[in-house]
Image (cartoon, rainbow, N blue to C red; front, side, top):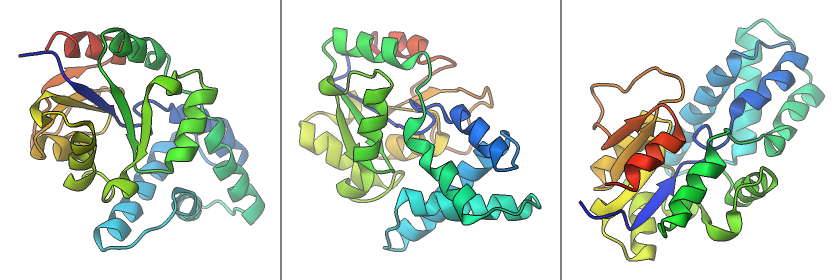
Length: 223
């Protein structure tokens, strides 16, 4: 197989390290382990709204999900505390393997697009502050490209905009649902299994899998 013509990266949890929310959650009276629960709730509500034709900001989803997690955890949370947690989002860092992996791709002359279900401007600012070479990659909002992933529209739009072959386009994500959507749309999926949880057998399998983004990118450039 020829070298990929384009690599598309998910942003939240794939590039951005949500473990950085742990201290904010602790100050709010929540366990740092509930960060994953919170993000799953954000995705659940975002998917529901998006798939039924609506739109809601990531920040609003984050506030509502935080209140739900706090309520179910038996924690009383003021508006000010909830807002302080949401305001910590733009100050998160990226995983240690992100910058070297992206530089390997760019060094191999493979264009890179970051495709996020969140606000692309906020994502770009966060990545730039974390030292990611955003001047060499494009950050695209899935909602601006037809709808939240894993709907087919954002994958198709990015492929169309770059004029590349879907089967020579790789989607990198830490979420099986994202790669399931990409593979069904005709792209190659590359799974960075950050949690070690493995990949669900009932979803379209990825083309490549690794525990580390650097290792995954080494596989991608040799496809």
